[in-house]
Amino acid sequence: MIDLNLCNPQHVKALHNIKETGNSSLSDFFQAEIDEAKAKLVIATDTVSIHRLQGRAEAFQDLLTAIDESFKVVNRS
Image (cartoon, rainbow, N blue to C red):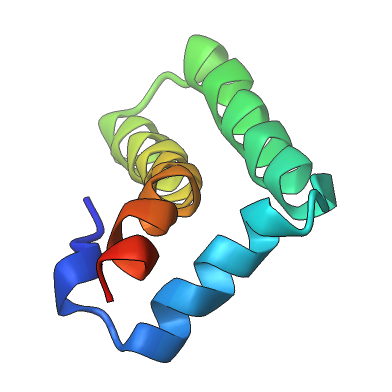
C-alpha cells in the first residue's frame, strides 16, 4: 500500500493529475498489467512464480489505488 501522506507533494500532485486530466491510458495500462499477471497466476506452477506474479499484481493495484485516492491528499493541502 502506498501511503500518500508520506509522499512528496509533487508526487501526489502527479498522481492526481493522471486522474484529473481524464487521460485513462496510463490507468488502462496498469489494469492490463494486473489482468496479465492474474492470467499468468492461473497457470503458474512453482511458488516463486506465484509470489512474483502476486507482487506484480499488488504493485500495479497499489498504483491504481493511489491515483484514485490522491485527490484526498491534494485537497487537504
